[in-house]
Image (cartoon, rainbow, N blue to C red; front, side, top):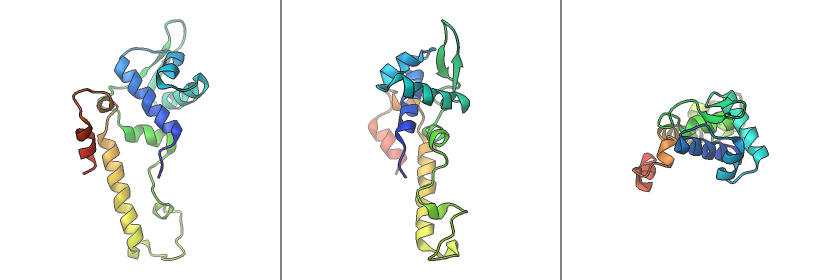
Length: 146
């Protein structure tokens, strides 16, 4: 499973919005996230449609997080942009396995399922705020995965 570039941009823009704590224009967000305005607008539309950010029109317009960055998780952002976390197609109920039709007997299916669950749980513990909070160390983030 690979987090797409678009999901990475979405995380970055949410982090910036949380850090700034105020309505911010798309051009400014694009500049701070080091992406083109066109891509920023595409990602912001998805974040707005998914109710993770709010948009405001007009001269005083811009974007802001729809909720506190201490509650918004990386998992929510990734799943909004990329869809549900699934590290292998064998975990998809619609996928028929040619090797082992009874997935519950397949050790590989069991292993992928456990890894997938751990990844989801870990990503649900990382908030946008943690990614820029100076009181949260690299070790604090790393320890989530242990």
